[in-house]
Amino acid sequence: MQRGKGMKFVGDSRIKASNKMPNVPKDYSEYPGKTEAFWPNFLLKEWLIGAVFLIGYLVLTVAHPSPLERQADPTDTLYMPVPDWYFLSMYQLLKYEFASGPYNIIGAIIMPGLAFGALMLVPFMDTSKERRPFKRPLPTAFMLLTFAALFYLTWESYVNHDWEAAKAQGAIVEEVEFDPESEGYQIYAGASCIGCHGDAFQGGLGKPLTNTGLTAEQIVDIAHNGIGDMAPGLWDGTDEDLQVLAEFIENLKSE
Image (cartoon, rainbow, N blue to C red; front, side, top):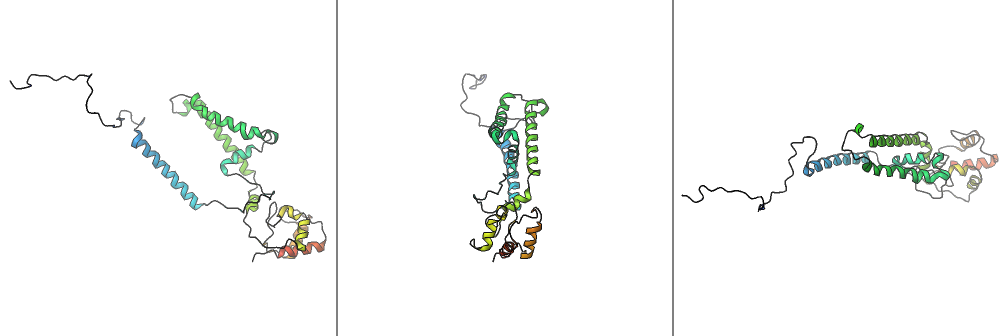
């Protein structure tokens, strides 16, 4: 009789196996389209999508660089700063009577706080495992309302803002040297011109007065008859002073 012949080997579940199985992801082939392994399948897809958006963002950055405006001047009270496009909705909200002035705290803190608070509470209020939007009415309605409010406020802010005036206010104007003690500047400072065109002729509500290319005669005519948004009849001084001022502005040229 050979050794071991006729013997049967039976495993005992109480005895732990000496060799462990390697850490292999589960086989999800039985659940197609419903779930997948986090590594590397899901993570790789996330990286690919992120790379596409990052490359697109870099291309837009190179193709459309950020516009630059003139150096900030804290003494310029005529300049009206405008936030970037993603804050235009908040900018518009603070224009309404119920969210501005004495009620500014409502538009600046309370209303945004309620919106972000509701957004954080949505996962706790909606615990459904459904992924179809019409099966999840609460988060779907909230997101549609949020999108509609942001779109409307951003659009209202865009169409009601004077972008041409804002461009003129922020335009980089080449500095021109002038003598603030000269007779022409003293007339300019004493007239109503400085309120619109700035103390250094940089512009504001009105256009810059440096490098205009206008002659003194044309400047006199504009002072009397106006041009564009500048109303006629604003000059209330003497003709002699206006002629001195016109010649002074005519010579405001960069070298």
